[in-house]
Length: 315
Image (cartoon, rainbow, N blue to C red; front, side, top):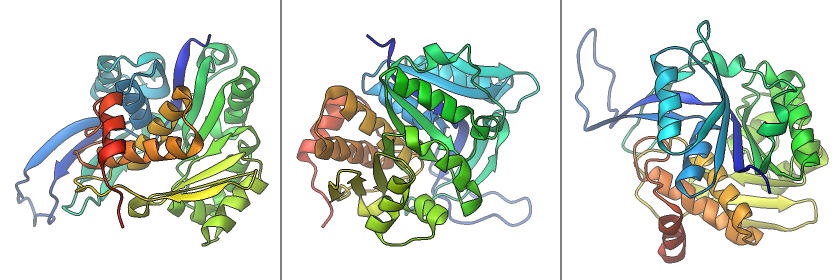
């Protein structure tokens, strides 16, 4: 049996969030807010904690600095039972960090320090333990400078060879990021970008055309997250469907796509069929949106399953 249910490798960030953001104060002025919190976020970090909350034995693989933010990130991951063996840390690194100002409609302008996401590197000696999982996830391809130069492909190839199901999310804003993404798609079972990221890469607008573009690059299936419109699934066998979003009051959209990835992994580990897997992932994303900060609305597997079964979809 694999050592882990889930390995989440990639973008981990320290987030400082406030709500509601209404205006930038003039000069040295102050605007009071109703809520304020800290969170481990990022395409890898959100997924790791949300998956652990729902019962998956989870390994974090990332890089942080030996600074206050990095110390807190490692402690917070451990608080949720995430194995931090794979979290590298060096005194010369800076922890990836964000200041997130969340508006009442859930949108969230942010200031971000890229930090050590660009620096960490999984060498060949680490790979056997890193990929010893039922589901292996890369969260943040295109932002992982050291890993994007071919090592993501090496790790994914090893994960596939070891029998893991592989999932990939990205942080890509333009076609210049496409080579790093295309390099790993032949080893990707489920490619799971937001529709905005996917369309920025390929320049297409139709959902089916967008999915087929990435299937043509080697992905076995494409799962596009659509924000308030839900999600779209399309695989190489021709199965396709759209899953509506749940009807919830959104407090913060930070990390919703990353929470979706965690819910998808839970569905795979539990052996759900693909439609139930996508719906469970959508439920995880919806719960994430009800709290301030990544994973805030996700409590455990039973709560998410109950929410999925009893909450109405939009429309």
